[in-house]
Image 1 (spheres, helix red, strand yellow):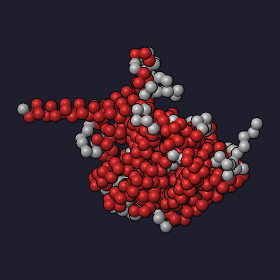
Image 2 (image 1 turned 90 degrees about the horizontal axis):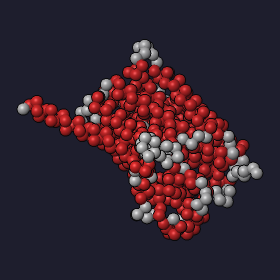
Image 3 (image 1 turned 90 degrees about the vertical axis):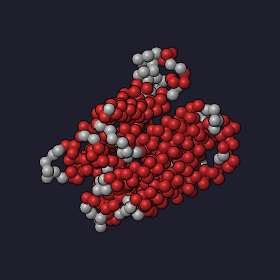
Image 4 (image 1 turned 135 degrees about the vertical axis):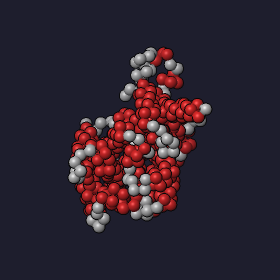
Amino acid sequence: MDKIYFLNQSTSLALVILICLIFVFLGIFHSKKFKGISNYLTANRNIGLFSLTTSLVASALGAWILFGPVAAATWGGVGAVIGYALGTAFPMIFLIFLGKKIRNEFPKGSSLVEFMRKKFGKSLFKLILLMTIFYMLIFLCAEVTAVAVLLNYISGTELWITAFVVLVATLSYTLYGGLRASIFTDNIQMIVIGILLFILITIINSSSGNNFSFTLINEKNPQLLSSNYIPGYTAGLTFFIAVAATNLFHQGNWQRVYAAKNYQTLKKSLIIAFFIIIPIVFLMGFIGMVSFSIDSSVRPDLGFFNLLLKDQTEILSLMIIILGLALTISTVDTLVNAISSLFVVDGKATFNLNKKTDYLKISKYFIIFISLITFAVASKGFDILYLFLLADLFCCAFVVTVFYSFYNKVNEKTAYISIIIGLVAGILMFPFPNFSKSLLVGVFLPKEFFSPLIAQSLLFLSFFIATFLPAIILKIYKIKFRYRTSKHYK
């Protein structure tokens, strides 16, 4: 039996092409008057409050918000939703302090990795650079896959077609206009996202009647709201640690830290972005709990669409496509420019090519190569959540050491040791794809050696250990250093 779609394929494809062309035109037209490497990397360090705020929010809220928080809420409950929302928003608060530090100490910089290169030797800097690019590549694959799956769900459009159109369109204006084009289109995209989210959530609220409430969730699935529900706590902490840690390594955020025309503008933008992101992510998670409570047979990550498209309305389908494209393109152009900027800024120190080498030109070839990988992954519709979690684990192992070094002196050897120990320990606890065991729990040692609480919390424990074990190593080093110093002076 053929599946009945909400919209015919030709209409949805025409809409995708039209929306993409609009953003291509806007991006190229706007950035024509802003040329040069400074505009490409940091928008000439002259972005005002409104543009910076909308760009920060649009870049943070990709198409994943239509799937991730909705699905997480069905098994992690309100704890997972709170953790997801805070994890997404809290880097904005961290960047208030970290941004001030990096702008003061390295005012002409444009990336976190560039700053780390000044702090550590070339060896560790290259490891941080590799990890950052790996994380952003996974993020890029996730976003393009999400919008391709969305179009396939609504109209049956083949995954590769959506992936191809979105990637070509985004590359067209981002590789031409750089950060300046990305921020300008983010402004438009965020306005579209805000209006459509408000309309669609209002429709869900009115069409669901009394069902759109915590009362229904409490009646059908009380564990999702219970303060005694342990998976809620572990899920919340897991998402908070993982999402917050990874977003701190997002080069797109650091570009915007440098793009602000002054620190006061940056601070205000980050605070406003924080308070915009939290309710949006929380509402999406709440919708997931409502959908699950109304019909638990629905696939968890499709809860938002299930509530919205139950009457198979074409107008709503068109609105969802526009929303999905705005969310995706705003994130993809940020990631494309972020990866490109890393290559431009850190390419010379990494590869040490001929002095006349045009790193900007090479970075564009590199981005096209990255985009081919993304296209291949998105065309297959792989579930890359597991790979995303692995990328999160890498970021968790780096986060304490890297940002501790902002305020404390850490030598390269100690930094290496703390990161590697944290990463190895985290990998030992990191669950297999079926989440039933890990290398340590179930392979090297029988599961019976561990309490059920440990066996059921492998993902949380892997992130927790990878994040905080390096902190212990650094603390031991600091105590040892003080002891040696005091002994030397005696």
